[in-house]
Image (cartoon, rainbow, N blue to C red):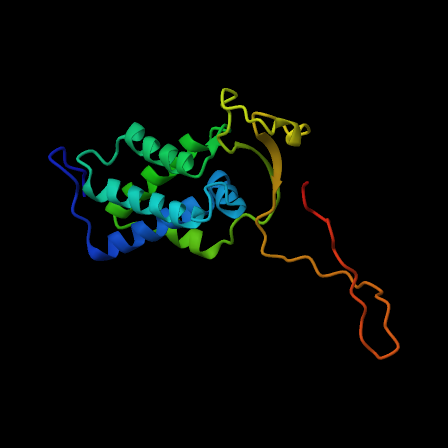
Length: 196
């Protein structure tokens, strides 16, 4: 099928389902979005905001008069990151936009190889350095309690290692003292990890 200039191409139910799944798979593997969701940069509802972005991209492809418009799709993705207080400074926005446009074209042709490949591969399991920002680049909004964060970089941009593997580190055994009655003595964690 060729996209029509008169409006969106009507996809079959199967094409819509696979397109939606593919969008979700691509966006869930986008390091900037994944980091924002995993770290809660968009607040408690970060996961819902990411899912809304998937829905907005799907609606763009199925309802837009020009679903192949690169800039229109990139704007939706950028807004999705902005909602998560994140900025991708690594060029990945353009890369993800291209991947989504390719996915859409493949679905129009009934070619689902990309989605099948995404299904059969785990999210990247190797760590990689990614430059992302949580969007707090405005230095105009200085707070009175600035002295609390003297060691923090004000632009909140970091080079971070992101490990997407599902491997959980094993708990290290700790020799804990055992009381005479057989109970294990647990030390208090008073003031550990808390800021004053």
